[in-house]
Amino acid sequence: MMAPDSSAETASDIALRGTRGAPIAMVRGQPVTELPADLYIPPDALEVFLEAFEGPLDLLLYLIKRQNLNILDIPIARITEQYIRYIDLMVVVKLELAAEYLVMAAVLAEIKSRMLLPKPAPNEEESADPRADLMRRLQEYERYKRAAEDLDALPRLERDLHLVTPDIADRRTLRHHPAVGLDTLRSVFFEVLARAQLFSHHHVQREPLSVRERMVMVLDRLAGCEFMEFTQLFSRAEGRMGAVVTFLAILELMKESLIDIVQSEPLAPVYVKAAA
Image 1: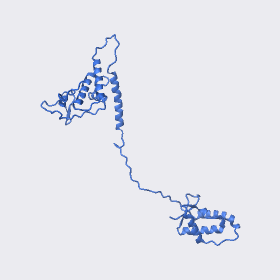
Image 2: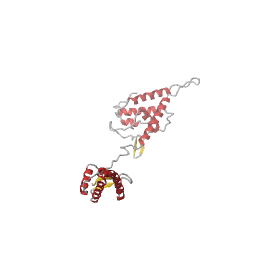
Image 3: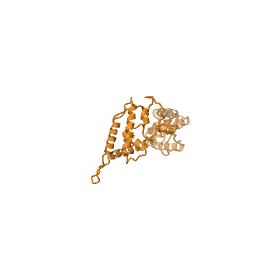
Image 4: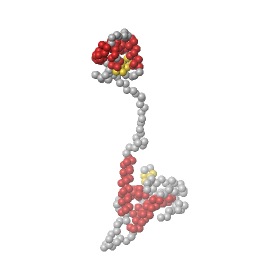
């Protein structure tokens, strides 16, 4: 196939001899199939924007669908003529032409020539339709194109959907421990006394114990840790007297809001911590 000389044929010439019956332009929504006879278009005055085709099969499918032709019964002569006109127009307007378009033009020309050959006699074996392979490729391409269009219609991130990241204020979860009643403290204290009684008879002489000094001792022990189990504040070696003094010191510290008594759930261990 020889491309026309752009110096001898302008874009207007191509438009005037465009596809028969197909509009060459749309003016106010109405198709225009013929240009006025007195219309003068200077050379290189028009920029022609063709349909964006993704390959020769896409161009062929466009020509077939535009004329509502049956893909299984392609009028190969008419389609070949229209296809070559599009190729010529691409050359005239200096569009980059991929080699695969020229290959398809050669294939169409070959099929057209085979269609023009005499048909075999009735008693001879009938040859396959020269268009069969092309029709199969067009059908397969049409299926893939429809699938691609269906996928493209789905919502796409950064095109139809946009992620929004709201600013979330820094929040800290505060866990409120249930209040520990005096009944619970009394029960725990009785357990401490029961253990301390086992060591009371070993002490021959006891040193006097001060509640105020024991308050200072309890605060010193709580300063090094966040929580301490209630029973760890008592020493078995001090016996019942030491346990009583320590318990009174704890009560005084609670009264002065210097310590907090916490318990995660009923019957769970009781813990002591320094007040915040």
